[in-house]
Each structure stands twice: as structure tokens, then as C-alpha cells.
Amino acid sequence: MSDPPVLRQAGPLAAIGILRHLQTYNECKSQSILFLKTIQWFFAMKATLILFIFFGLQTSYGQKSDDSKIVIKINDTSSIYQQVKYSLVNSNFIVKDNGNKDTLETYYQEYEGIYCVAKAIIKGNTIILSGAYGLKKMDDFGYTQAPKGYNRITYFKGSKGWKLLMKVANKINGQITFEK
Image 1 (cartoon, helix red, strand yellow):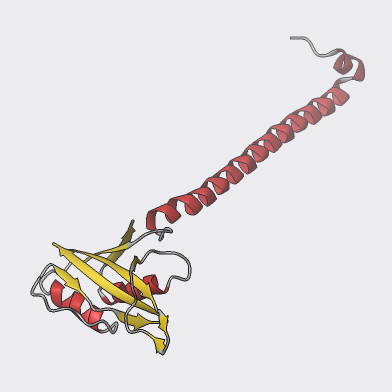
Image 2 (spheres, helix red, strand yellow; image 1 turned 45 degrees about the vertical axis):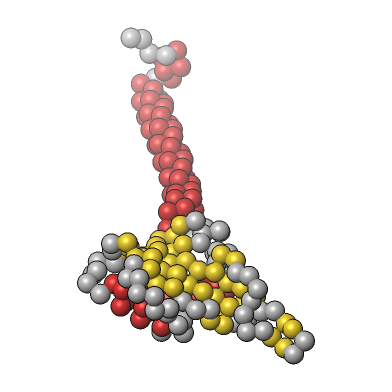
């Protein structure tokens, strides 16, 4: 292989300097390309992680608007009926005594300006907690004792009924998930 024409005219010492310069230039160029690829990879991974956190965790574990059931799974099923009844009573509900050991229902209870009714269905080691709410109705003498109708308690930001159901669910020690 013959030397480039510039190297033949410049002499041996200049040729060595020019070759070292070209070699250093090529090394810097390859290092800068490697550095740019590393930065691109870093930003791609960062964007992927942010998207995963935003979409993945929100859909997996978070409450979604219009959720109406709180599902609680517990490990100790020996006194599950008593645990659920205790959490309802400690949340100021009065539990109906209808003799049914797999479903607990409550009478309506006034909570922050609304009337709430709770229902807990026990299936094995799972408790499904749901409820209904009714608004106070004003008559000629003041507030009536019972609302005329009830609506299902669903999750939305600022829901007083959902806050009450979560208070009951948190008193039952278990893993909490949500359903529509």
C-alpha cells in the first residue's frame, strides 16, 4: 500500500505527525459517536421508565374513576365475620342482625351531610365492600331523617361516601384492590 501524496512530499517526520493526527482524530470521532449513542440510550430508557410509571402503576394499583367496589383479601379467615363487623361498627355503622354469615348490611348513617349504607360480602378469604348514599332532603320543618332514594357509591375525587368505605376497608387488615 502506498502513502498518500501529501505524506510523500512532507517528509518522514511530518508524515508521522500527520498520521498521529489522523489517528487521534479518528479515535475522538469514534469516542464522540459512542458518547452520543450512550446519551441517546439513556434518554430512551428514561422516557420508557417514566411512561411505565405513569401508565403501568396507575392502571395496576390506583383507584379509577367509577370504581364502586373495594375488594379486600386477608390471610386469616378464622374470624373474618367478626373483623368485618368490628370495622363497620368502629366506623359508626349499625350492622343489621339478619343471621346471614356471608353478607353484612348496615342501616343508613349520616356522614358529612350525606346518608350512607354499607354492604360487605364475604367469599372465602375475600371481602367485597360496597355502598350507597342518599342526600338530605329538606322539608318544611328542617331535614328529614331518611333520603328518598340511594345511589351507588363510586370513586371520584372528593367523594365522601368512598372516603367512608375506605375508612372501613383500612380497619380490616388485608390487601386492598378496586373493581367497578
